[in-house]
Length: 234
Image (cartoon, rainbow, N blue to C red):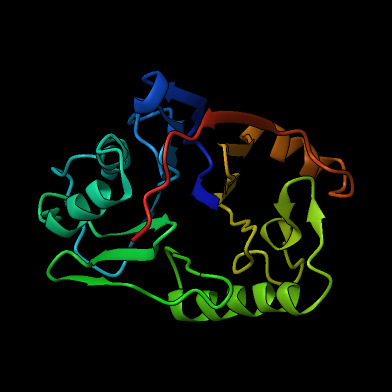
């Protein structure tokens, strides 16, 4: 997952909260203290994408608090129930995605109406957001991802090369976006294995060094692990 964010907004690294079966792991936003992606010891992943197609209010709580709140529920069934009952009304528009052994579930909130669905994975699940030209940007990024998927599926370290692709002729629409006021700040990949989960974090400083060095070598990244206690089937 790429985090596209304002140039001046920082991150404070990977954080683990709790120990043992109750541990959760995620990168943390430096400004509000929340997150956009995380995982728990049940192998449940939550991702949050900001939406820009609805009314934005200045008096809303941070959307980044939702992922820790959900992951603390523990099992897939408990997180799924939390998602099904979550009232999005206090928050600005967002898309909240649950990924687990039971598939993908989403809560889509445009500021007025909430929609819940279970999209198919065949074999990938693609989703994006953009603060400008969404329809055009979404189509461009989907083409870039499908070109990677139908090609050599190259990886740079643990990261699919598609997540590090920036078209020099259209950097503002690319998966690795670059705009005058915002860019892809970091990249996260989460692997849920039989006995552990691994969170790979391409942190902002490394991503910027990689850009400046010509984008050829595998960038530096950090990996943290959590032991799996149980993976609940749907």
